[in-house]
Amino acid sequence: MDFYQKLNLKHVINASGKMTILGVSKVSQESIDAENFGDTHFFEIADLVKKSGDYIAKLLGTEEAVIVNSASAGIAQSVAAVIGQGSKYHLYHPYSSKFSKRNIIIPKGQNVDYGAPEEIMIELGGGKVVEAGYANMCTVEHIEMMIDENTAAVFYVKSHHAVQKSMLSVQEAVKVAHKHKLPLILDAAAEEDMQKYLSLGVDIIIFSGAKAIEGPASGLVYGKSKYIKWIRMQSTGLGRAMKIGKENILGFTAAVERYLKVGPENGQHMKKRLIPFINELSSVPHIKVKLAQDTAGREIYRAEITVESDSPKSAKDVVSELKAEDPAIYTREYRINEGIIEFDIRAVNEIEMKQIVRRLKEILG
Image: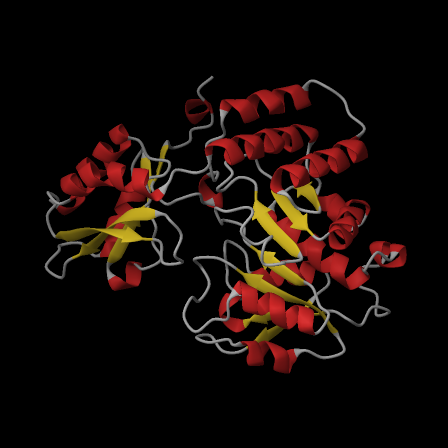
C-alpha cells in the first residue's frame, strides 16, 4: 500500500543525515524480520528486557545494558537513576524533596537543542541543570568548581551540535567525575563507535538505536552494572511513559548484531560516492562546492556548497525551495546564515543525487 498517496504525504530525499524529523534511518531486513517475530509472539516483558540487555552487553563487552525507547528516554531515566540510587521510595516519588542530590553538571556549550533541549530531558528525570564554563569554553577546573554536596552526576554531550573548541575531553570529564566519586553520563546518541567509550571508563553511555545503528525507534543505555540496574528500575516509575515495545526490542537487537558485523558506511566509501556528485554539483550556477568532513571529527563526509554573493537566491531561499516540492529535499542547514548548505549522502542513492542537482539548477539557473 502506498502510504504517501493514502495519507497525502510528500516523498522525501534525506540529504540531511540521520535526523529524527525525517524518521532517522532506513531499517535493514534483518531488523524488520525480528520486529515481525516480536509482533506475532508473546513474552514475559521484564525477562525480555533483562535478557536482551544481557545479550547486547556481552556483544559489546560491557557490564550491563538496557534497551529503552529513545536516547532522550535514556537521558531522563539515567538522571532519575543517579538521583534515586536504587531507592524504591524515589521510584514512586521521583521529585520528592527527600532527595537533595539533584545537581547535574553540564558544560554550558553542550546544553544544546538536538530536537529538544538537553536540559528538558535532565529536568524530566528530576535533575537540576548546573552549567559549567562558558558557551565557548569548558575546562576540568570549570567542572570542578561547580561540584558540591548536591551534585548527582557530571553530564557530557558528544555531538556535532555541541561546541567543539576549548572543550574538555570525555576522558578528562571521566577523570574529574571519578575524582569526586560521581558517575559520568555520556549522551553519545549519534556517535558511530559503540565500544570507544567503554575503554575510557564512562559509567553510563547513551546511544540512539535509530541513528548510526539503523534500528527501529529505540535507544540503548549501557555501562557500569550498578547504574544500569537503577535505570532498569525506572520502567515501573517515570520510565513507564517511555516504554518500548517487544517488536522494537527484538528489531534493535538484530540491528546491533548487524552493526557490529557490518558497521556504518566508512569514510573512504563515502568519499568515493561523493566525487561524481560533487562534479555534477559544480555545474550548478552561483555556487561553490567542496568535500567537507563532519565538524565534530567523525568519519562522515559531505558535499558542502556555498551560495555566492551574485546568486539571485540566498542559501535560505534555496533550502526553502528544495523542501517545497515533491519530493521534498532536506539538507543540513546549520550554517545557512553563512550561505553554506551541506548534503549528507548516507541515505541518498545515485538517482536521488541527480534529482538534487536537477532541482538546484531549476532554483538557481
